[in-house]
Length: 545
Image: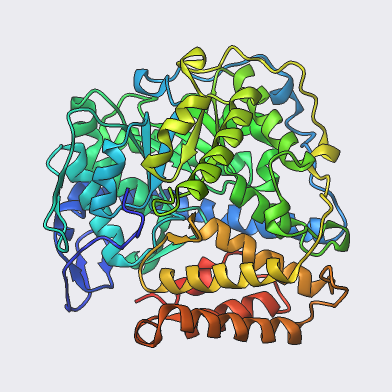
């Protein structure tokens, strides 16, 4: 996989907004091959889904705000009483398709052309093409990503690297393709239907499905998706209704679409059974989206002085609130006949330091062995160089999955999921959060959605942790381990120092061409503002062309 995570190449030509019959309007410059992926089938399906489900999406986003108001008012996240029968009932989800039975190692990454080829060629079971946390949603990136996936599904994708002249194409054997659309909260401002922007989630989903469902069927696979950032079973119900209508509109058999849901918000951790139940004809698993989960833990409990978390580096998966979340997910999935997928290994192989690389790979192995021992059926990696280590943990003895590992020993209650870990807050941790936040946001504004920093692949989820921790620490007057309060003035001073260090590290020429000062200004505002912004990418999206 291309660890530089460059945006997909696409040729933009300035043209006025285009409107066609059907009530849709594109408010963006023309992009090469856009007409191929935005044909009548894709736009027709998108219009149908938008008109039918946009009001419900808005209702559910409003429900998120009401939920937060209850937490801010003193309520605790809890298991729902009105869905107790679902949790107690004996039911199972539909069996997995043949090419989703063995998911021991999955690679994830953005949708630029070189990455798509390298990820599908990687020695893994599956590749999740990510339109969400690993892709900056410029119009060029989104259209080029859809073109790249359409070419890959039809096995006609080729990429010639401009620098090296090397030609990339698909091998005879490829990983199973899954696609992650954007979350329910994100709009797609470049395409309007009846004068209103469409949901980014529906755009990514409808365009991919309409263009590729027949070619996927011909290739012996299907339209498989990852669903991010759900906060309730009602949001899962909305996705299920979208699937049902889309299948009807396209003449597809009910249950053809399959989805794996990322349990990466604190509210969703209390509704795992319910989410599986709502999607039971279309679900293929739940995934421990641990980075977003940590972000959500901070976000939901942000106004609680007793819920302040220590440095991000100390938030390891053996902490009670994270271990409990993992154990509950595995037990819930296997009880319902569904795959339980593990979290991301974000390490990048260190090619110029064998000793450091060996240490890093040893840490990856320990983490993956923990996941395998917990009963997970598979795991995520960010680079093909980690595949061998991941398979060593999920070895042949665990193939093709661990669905028979019931984890009947697990008993998790709300206190376990809400157990706040202790630990230090250090100036080093503050500086690390500032550096990652600024560097990531600068790259995102420049069109790249994932950034290699310090031999780790950082994406929107890790940037969100950085931003949320800084806001929480300032909000509650946290003290670093040297006894000093981290107030707004101190944070501003440290931000200026980190920005200057970044400037010196990248060099004046690159710095002048970049978006670092804009990123630092926005990031600084979001870490000290009186109100906590729901997502970093919402105000940042307004700065994209």
